Amino acid sequence: MSENDTNTAGCPIASNFNRAHNVFDFPGAIPNQPGAAAPLPDIYNNTIYIPSGQGTSVVGTRSGNTQPGSYQFRNNLVLNFGSKGYLQTTGSVFANNLLYGPRNSNEPTTGTVYLSPQLVGPLQSATQASGGMAAYQPRESSPASGTGVAIPSNGGRDIAGNPIAAVPSIGAYEKANTNLVRNGSFDSGALTPWTLSGPGSSLTTSTSFNGSSALQTGNSNSGAENVVSGLTPSTTYLMSAWVKVGVVGEQLAIGVKNYGGAETYSKSTDSGWALNTVPFTTGPTSTNATIYCYKNTGSGPGFCDDFSIVRLSNPASLVANGGFETGSLAPWGLSSSVAVSVTASAAHSGSFGLATGVANSGVQQTISGLQPGTTYVLTGWLHAVSGEQIALGVKAFGAAESFHAVTGATYAPAALVFTTGTASTQATVYCYKNAGSGAGACDDLALTAVG
Image (cartoon, rainbow, N blue to C red; front, side, top):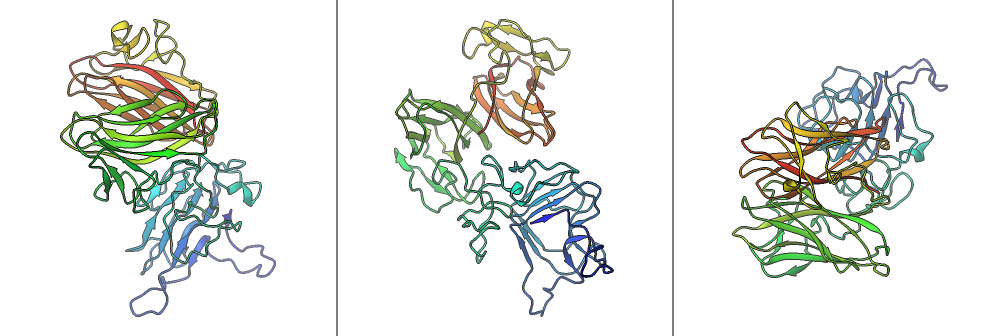
């Protein structure tokens, strides 16, 4: 654990010895030259905080910006608001690191996640260090939880003495992944505890959204299901998964049943990996639910990966008039000068929906009162015309704009997960059709906090 490390000036033991400003310092060549006996240096599962104004390198040297040799940098959580980055080498390995702060020109881009780490806090800013080591623990919704790479002979314990999970967290603290779905990533090497729903489904290593494996269904009447236990009665959850179809125009469904309410599902026609979500509320005595991935018809397979179930402590949508059921546009504003309309013909559910223009047309709404460093899920239903696209998106939330495009003339779901910046309390959500020859439509837009 490193917080605001700079140099040794003022050190009572060696007050006159001022070393280089590096958290990890290689005095010279990295000790893995051909013929050398030293092993490849391996820097893993550290948490590092560098405040604004510091010229401290995460990995550096006193002998220039580059050195011969290579090192590994894995499972590290780095909050770097300073001006320097990483020692440049040829052949170094960077994997499963979470970097937060202004982008640095020489930071690793491979094996990197750029998201708010969502620490217990108090939340770090560019100038404010923590209130102690425990502040660097990841919260339940942290993207660092359960997203590291397994490292042999890692000592078996985190900085607090907690056992390291089979799929470890990023950083110095181990945090058990609160995802309630067992083997939701299909990376265990076996299908268990999933069971087949019809013939033809199997694990595949040829394509996955994340990790080594995914579920591949058969072409039709094929899928797999998983009984999830440990749920709380009368509680709202969000089930999500990354999905895609193998043949353009076909459909794949994820769904939930046997949870004390009516079976509910969402179909996707995305041919590239896309997030899909299904909210559900358990019955008054229900502690289990059966989730599934299923392809009903078609000539090609479907694929599902990274299933998750998280509790929604406040499932009420933060989007005002997200279903356009007032019959008017307010408080939505236009995204351009091109007109839109609230009309019954555009409804996905209820009495009204939004019809965009044919191109450069849509609506947006700025939502205030959000919590900094917090994960939210944005969902909606959209359609364009055959062969054209319309997008659900979010911007101005303290990180890069993100959107999910839907193709085709039939209403289809879209979903985004995003994390507000450490100083951000609002976000702008939108439905937008960029180009084409026909109008698009959107309806039932909702925003909820995860956790």
